[in-house]
Image (cartoon, rainbow, N blue to C red; front, top):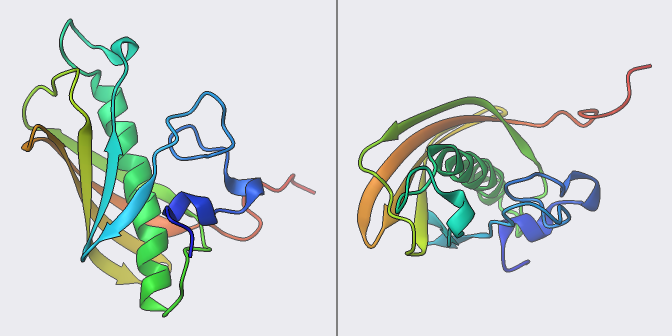
Length: 154
């Protein structure tokens, strides 16, 4: 089994800005199981600023988004008894609540919990922590990517 969920993504589907290992400009987030939760650690760079000293909210949303779709893939795989998340998921809905300003500097922890698996849909709640304090919480409805997703129209 790959160390990180994103390492199992096939090359053709590993270009996402947030989690694609093949995107040279992306965030390259890496997610693992931590008991029944999933965990991603990410250290924002100085250019991820909103106002001096604080992280840009769009980055927070993208971290929640990609962490949650990776969690969805791993949860679906785990429910099927697999060893590595093979299916890719895309975001059907993203809702983010900003609880407190997220300070720029510390490594962030994003923790995800699977709320529901139903058919091709997985609902994930993810929370961003800075220095152990929850600063944002999001819910993602992720759907399994159709096999022909991204294929050129005929």
